[in-house]
Image 1 (cartoon, one colour):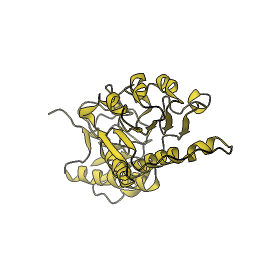
Image 2 (cartoon, one colour):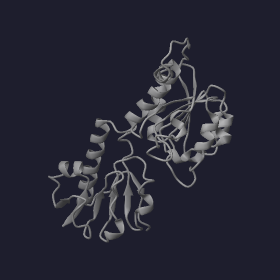
Image 3 (cartoon, helix red, strand yellow):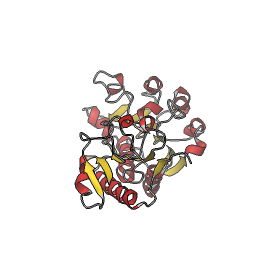
Length: 283
């Protein structure tokens, strides 16, 4: 009998998967083979000796990757959250360029002519599926987009010097931790915009605070999270908006993640290959 301990939303959608017993995370764990955890509620994976697959419902796996034992396949939800994150980034840039975000924080009448996104130079650091979706939407609005992926990480400083907007979509890893530092922010032109929908810990927070208000900032992620109410980022001039790590969490995206998890569960039960494998057991 294949056993799955799954998130409640997945359990509700997977009742017809043949040969699978569906359990909640509070149930017996020692015979669990397939796990779909909720963000931030990861059970003790060392207490699951039968575990073979962990399927998360997020694109990033940094929050669980160190906990997944050797010999267990880790899969993400790549592609499921591209649309809302891309739309959040476009909204952040448009809100900054039009002055709407500034006006929302500064309740006074002041003449501030808008900037045009058309013709703006946008650097997207982290050019996976979300980065490509973001770039396509920005190009449709006339922006000139440069995207750099994993192979070109390290070029962000030189490319930032030519950018009107720098978008961070980088997943967190040892290599990316703190990669947006004083050198990168110092290279950005006066009046440029930094948008972070990647991970908070990829940014040197002290360097970011030193860079404002010479540059503008819009954030969906921070370090730490949740960001304490007395953190200086909340009141720093030039920080135009901070949302609570929610850019990818639209209702439609959540539904796509559930559908993916159920498809993955069906594939595992039938012995078919899994999609979106981030880490596979060593041969």
